[in-house]
Image (cartoon, rainbow, N blue to C red; front, side):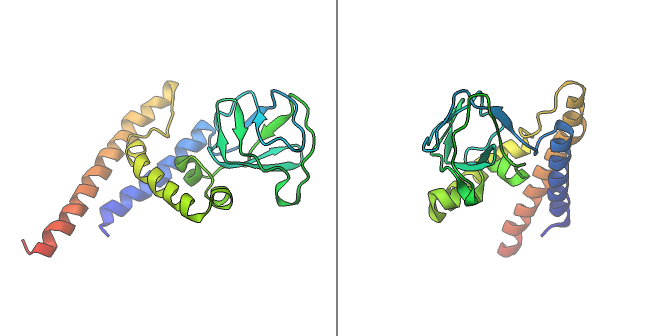
Length: 184
């Protein structure tokens, strides 16, 4: 593979990690229950699901729960008492949180492991391919870097020129793949 393309891919990964650290992202997402839940509830109402993935694990107290969907204020398709934890009653205002999600899961918008367990392998693979293809423009435009205030200068001075270089290197790589086999 073209060394310049590898360099830009390395820079993309490094800058993404740096942006997440600067923004405080990639860590825990947390909210609170907006109403009490019983052990057999499969929908969990919370104050907000912002910063949570579309499919993932959540924790309420000592209970681990998987969910297969989310709305603005609820987790749906919940499986309670996962991995040997016990499904219990939880009061309103109890903290709900997830483990730190990695960069891949944040970019895809869902936890691949949980999705595979709950939706099946074929559906998860299809979902991954669709999300990767649809997220390429967002990655190049640095939509995952919500730098604001004085930090927005990083986007303009570092990240956007990096994107332009990446697109150029990618175009040159594909040009090389197309022209060389046809003996130009």
